[in-house]
Image 1 (tube, rainbow, N blue to C red):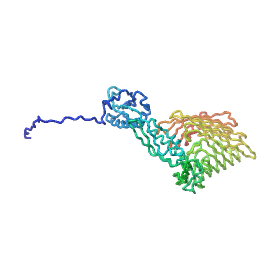
Image 2: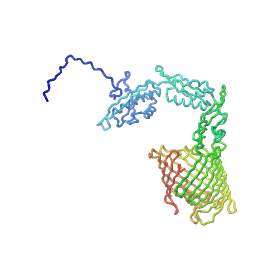
Image 3: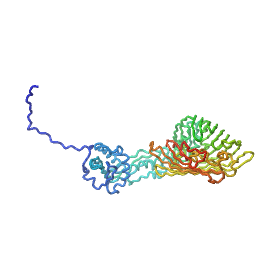
Image 4: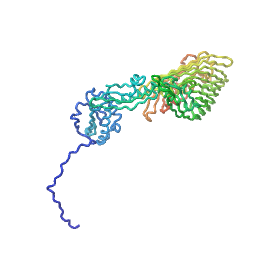
Length: 637
C-alpha cells in the first residue's frame, strides 16, 4: 500500500463536559446494604426465623408486637415464589427477581391481617457456604408490622329489618373494635349466608364487602349490603317429568313437610337424593314464590324440580376365574324404572364350574318414604362347592334401610320373609339327596360409626343377624334360630397406617346338626373369613373328608393398612393374620382353630380400593392348598 498521509486531531483544550448525574438504584437489582426507611434501621430489634439456607424472615423480638407470626409464616410458605421454585440452585439475579415478587406478597398478607402501616425490606446478599470456601445467595426480609387496625363501623344493609334480625346479626360475629382481618370477613359472610338460608330467607342477597381504611384512626369501616328479601315456608314439590318421577314421589323422599320453614340445606338434600336414584343425568331444584310474606307471617315457596332422564337400561357381563369359584360367567339385564316411580326389574344368570343360576329381582327404591327399599328376589340355582351340593328354588322378600355407595347410614335395618325348597347332599358324596322345605324370617340391624363404607380409617361397626326358621325334611319339622354377630374396629395410627380388627360369632340353637340343611349351617374359610384357606373348607368333616358345617362359628382378624409413596400414594401394603373355628355344638369348643396369614396390596381408586390378598395356612390340613389368592373391591372388612 502507498504511504498513508499524516492524520491528526488537535485536543480541544477548552472542551467542557456536563457534570455526571447520580443514578438511583434499580429496584430489581440485589441490595448488598441495608438502607434506612423513614430514618430507622429496620434490622434493629429483630430476630431471625430461618426458613431455609437461602431464605430468612426477621420479626420484632417482642412476640406481642406480631402475635400471628407462625400463622403468617405458614401462609407465606404456601404462596411464596421463592418456596415454589426453590432457591438452592438459583443465582443471585434469579433470587433477587423472586424476592421482589415475595415482597409484594408479604405486603398483601400483612394487609390481609390488618397491618396497613407495615414495612418490608428485602436484602439479597452473598453469604459464605457451609464449606466455608464458596458463597451462596441469600434473601432476608425484615418485617416491621406496625399497629394492627381494627374494625370501625359495620354496615350490613337491611339485615336489621328482617323479622329475626337479631338472630341473623349474631351469626355475623364481627363487632366494632375487633382486630381487622379479611379472612374473618370471608368466614363471617359465609356464616351469615348460611344462617339466612337456614332461617327461611330463600331469596336473600349479599353484596361483596368493602373496607374504607382510615390511616389516622387505624380503623377500617366495613360495608356489606344484605337484602333478606322476606321469610318463607316450604310449599309443594313439582316435577318437570310427572310420569317419570312425580312431584308426590319427590315430596315423599324430601326431608321436609309443607309448612316447614324453608331451609336451603333441605333443598340441596332433595337434589342429592334425586341424583342418588340413578335415574337422572341432571337435576335442578329452584324455589318459586307462590305466596308473598305478609308482615311477620312467612310466605310460601314451591320447589320446581327440572329433570333430565338418564339411560335406564343396563346390560352387563363378566367372566373370570378364581381358586374358590372356578370358571364363572355372569350376565344381567336391568331396567331401573320399568315400574315408575323407581321400580326396577333385573334378570340375571350365572354359568360356572360350581354355580349355575337364573334369577329375577324386583326392587322399589324409596318405597313409601326416603331410603326404604322393597326387594323381591326369585331364583333357581345349582351349587356344588367344597361343602355341599344343592339344587335350590327360593323366593325372598325384604324391606329395610341399608347403606349404599352414595348414602352410608349410621343405622341400617331390614326384615323379610324367605321361602326355600332345596335338594342337598354333602359335596362329592355318594349319599342320597335330601329335600328341605324352609321358611325363615331374616332380621338384620347394624350400627356404623366408620368414616367410609369401602375404606374406613376410624370408627366401628356392629351388625346382628337373626333368622327364626322352620325346616321340614323326611316328614319331620325342626324349629331353630340362626344368629350371627359381626364387629369391626378401625384405628388410624397416623397419616400412613390404619389398624383394623374384626370378630364374628354365630350360633344355631333349637335343632340337631343333621336336621339343618347343609346350606343353612355355618362354615369358615375364604376371602371374607379366614384367608389362606379355601371357601367353606374350615370345620368338622365326615368320614369321607367332606366339610359338614357346624352349629357355631368364631372368627377373628387383624391387619395393618400401610400407605406407600407408590403411584402418588395410591398403593398400600397390608399384612394380616386371621383365625377361625367351627364346631358342631351350639357353643364353640375350639377343638380345631385354623390360622392364616399373609400380605395384601390395595390400589386406591375414586370409588374404593381394589384388593389383592395372598394368604397361606399356618396349620393346614391334608386337603388345604399351600397358598390362596383373593381379589375384590373394598377392604376385606
